[in-house]
Amino acid sequence: MQYKVIVEDATQGLMGGGAMESASMALSEKVNEAIGEGWEPLGGISHSEDRQENPYLLQAMINRNAGLVEQTNE
Image: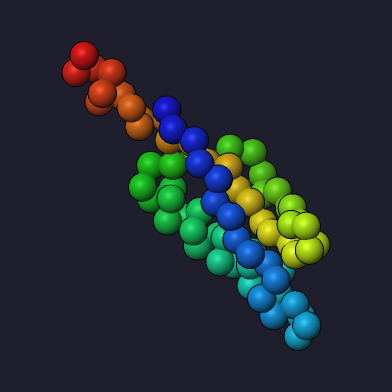
């Protein structure tokens, strides 16, 4: 099994509004692409900020099939 976190910067367009909506759409595209590659979302979307209070959206993902080939060949 493998684990990864997809991170999307939500600071773009902050002054003009719509930054969170744009980041949500971009994150959705990345998550859907990962799903197509065999990854599964683990839990819901998280929100975080860096030290300068810039917002980020995060989605944890797991791939249950990753590593099975290596284990069966041993």
